[in-house]
Amino acid sequence: MAPDLAAPRSTLSLQAARFAGNRLAVVSVYVLLAIVALCFLGPYAFPFTGQDADFDNISAPMNLWSAHPFGTDDYGRDLLVRVLEGGQVSLAIGFLGALTAGVIGVLYGAMSGFVGGRTDSLLMRTVEVLYGFPYVILVILLSLLFGGGTVALFVAIVFTLWLTPAVIVRAQAQSLARREFVEAARAGGMTGWQIVVQHIVPNTVSLVIVYGSLLVPEVILSESFLSFLGIGIKEPQASWGNLIQSGTAQMDTDLRLLLLPGGLLALVLFCLNFIADGLRDAFDPNER
Amino acid sequence: MTPVLEARNLTVGYYSPGGLFTKPLFLPIVHEVSFTLQAGQTLGIVGESGCGKSTLGRALLHLIPAAKGQVLWRGENPADLPRAALRQRRADMQIIFQDPVAALDPRMTLGRILSRPLATFEPSLSKADQLTRVAEVLHRVGLSADFAGRFPHELSGGQAQRVGIARAIIGRPAVIVCDEPVSALDVSIQAQVVNLLMDLQAEMGLALVFISHNLAVVRHISHEVMVMCLGRVVEQAPRDAFYARPLHPYAAALKQAVPQPDVAAERLRRGQSLPGELPSIARPPAGCVFSSRCPKAQDLCRQVRPELTSYPAARTAACHFVDTPP
Image (cartoon, rainbow over all chains, first blue to last red; front, side, top):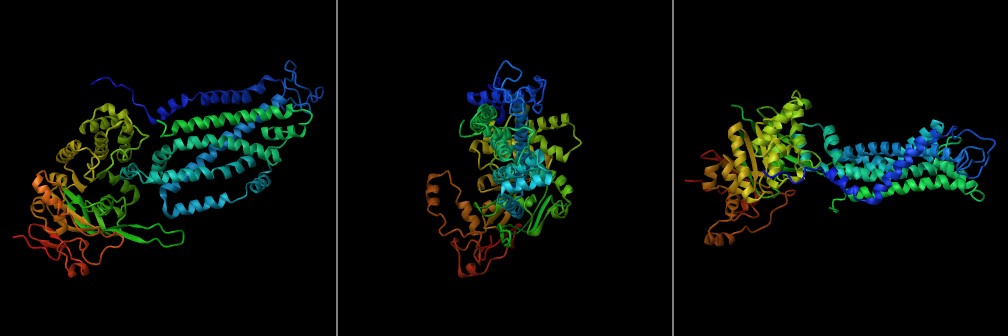
């Protein structure tokens, strides 16, 4: 037999190759990785934390060669370190929130679509009821419950954002459940749960990755939005949201306090959206 | 000897999706089917599309529960088995599908697809033993062992159907339900697949339920033929007797519909297609299921449904006007 022309390739590796061909998306991945590394490693390069006030240098202007390269805020706290530490919070909530919401949504949706019938309608009516729940009121309730801060914010964000992936995956699972390989799996003695986890979920993975990559910026944005409103992360802990909020208070006199966190947030959101775009193109079966 | 598969007055149907508060409506698809199947035998089930053949096939595997009557696997009703035991017993009862590619999970390698049933049916088997078994069945269906690393989208229809067969036999079953296994394949491949099934049957003593609308293929593989029309059995007979002379006018019409290689005979045949409408399976006629299209239909046929009646040579038919064979 003639040697194999091409080694067997999984659809996933083909899709990875297609993604690698998208220059903008690949660059975005590197930029995003750089920002993540900077946020999590950068603060160690400074002898002080973002909560240490330097009373000799209150509202110091930007001077790249001084101890505070981007200056300090009106409490004398180093702006760069605060922005990097805020980035840790925002990025962690973004990725963990999207992951948690994604996992819950995927399993819920896959189960609902696979089981079908009354269970399905019951589960989906529940989702619709939760959709109708006012988001901001929920966050306020939860921050009363958890005493505000990261946990309340995280729970609130996950609580509202798992709904959409559930609906999307359910539709996909419904059509997968009627496919013959699922019937073969039942004839092969698999339990319903095994079928959901081993057959249904892997087949929704392309959809989930694309949607998940859009979910991350959504979570980061809602974290910023809530912190901006003062419901989310509270001072002195920094997050991009509350840094931008305190920046806007002084934007008439000192734009620097707004531009550094705002610019970084915008850059991350751009990157994530380009990556999502690249993933969608890579997974689109019409784009062979 | 206990038959490997038996159906007793099996009625199967679907529930129309009721809302949260409305009662779901039961819509029977298959009515009161009975037969027995011994090891090493093939039962051919024929009928036009939508007559309930595939539904019956899935009910035989207990993929759809029986609404009335029962299925017996070696004398045991799968509906009475506890869940875990039922899953183990499924090793005995396998299925091959019409669309061979859709029957394989596109995200799994063939090796994983084939070894998955082993993980359930023979959990004590080591990884290496599993791989040996996979290579064994791949070889048995005429594929090389390196197919184990491939993905379903790299296969042709015939290859995919061979993989489907390999998955069915890997747990060493007693019965395989073949749901139109060759109708999606090229004619040249059809013969190969049918011959492969017959070889496996001879080797493993398999019993086959061969569902098809292709009478020629059914004639080749079956020992016994069952004709279904609108969810009811209208005739059942040993193969040779059936092909020599079908008793039921619907069976005769099906046989008539097979194209003939002779030009003159074909021209004659084309003039005799069935008149009349196929009734909806949701609203079957009160009388004989075939009465709206039957050339012999009388008033009696439209009002009273004929019972399945026994005739000589171990055959049955449901028709008021069977002219008994001489």
